Image (cartoon, rainbow, N blue to C red; front, side, top):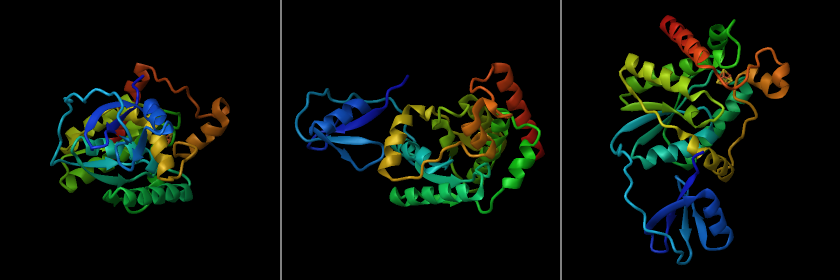
Amino acid sequence: MTQERVQVFDQRGQELSPCSLEKAQRLVAEGKARWREALPPAVELTRAVDLPVRKPQKEPDYAGQRVLLHICCGPCATYTVGRLRTLGFAVTGFWYNPNIHPWQEHERRRESLVRFAEQVALPLLIQPGYDMPAFFRLVAGRERFRRRCAICYALRLRAAAQKARAEGFDAFTTTLLISPYQEQELIRRLGEHLADREGVRFYFEDFRKGWAERGRLTRQYGLYRQQYCGCVYSEWERYQGEACETYAPARLEPADLHAYFEEALEILERL
Ligand code: SF4
C-alpha cells in the first residue's frame, strides 16, 4: 500500500525530503513542525531536524496545460486539485453528477464543493440542470452494483470530455480516481475511450495514494462528508448490505469488467 507523503520545509523555506503523514503528525504533535495552510499538504519545521536534502524528482511537468477535473464531491477534490497543481496543471473543476440522489443531497454536495473552490481559488464550471431522469433511464434493468456504475462513470466522463473539448482544455480527468470504492480500471478504460472519441487527452493517475490526506483536508476545510456513494441504490446498499437486491461484492471478475465496459460503450454510442 502506498504511503501518503507530506512536503517538508525548513525554517528558511528550503524544501527537504518529504515524509510520511504519520511522521508529519508526530513532528507537529512534538512541536517540531507546524502545518502549512497549503495544497498539497506541507509542514514547516520549527527547528533543525535531521532530514536528507530532497533529491530531484522525475515527475512530469505540465506547466502551461489546462486540465478539466470532473469532481464528484468536495472531499475528493481536496487532494486531487493539489496534486494536479503540483504537476503544473492549471486546474478547472467541473460539476456534473446526475447520479446523486435525492436532489437535496445533490445540492448539499454541490454547495460544499463551491465553498471549497472559493477557499482554494479553483475555477468551477457547473453543468446546469439535474439529469436524474436520464440516469435512471440508462441504468434501468442494469441496477446491479458495478454494472450500473460503468454506465454512471460513462455518463459523467462523457460530459467532462465534451466540456473539455468545447472549452479547449488540454486534458480531462476525474476525482473518481481517488476513491478505493470505485472501479478504477473501468474508469480508466472509459476515460481513454472518450479521449479518443472527443479528441481530448484523458489524464490518468492512481490518486488513491492521497486517500488518507483527503480525510485530513476534508476536516481542515470543514466539508460535508456524505454517507453513501450517490445513487439511491448505493444508499440502500450502504444500510442494507447483502440483504439488498442490487448488492454485489466489490471485487469484479475480469470477464464482468469487460462485459460492463462493453455495455457502457454501447450505451454511449446511443447517447
Ligand atoms: S454506486 Fe456510485 S458509481 Fe455506482 S452507480 Fe451509484 S452513484 Fe454511480
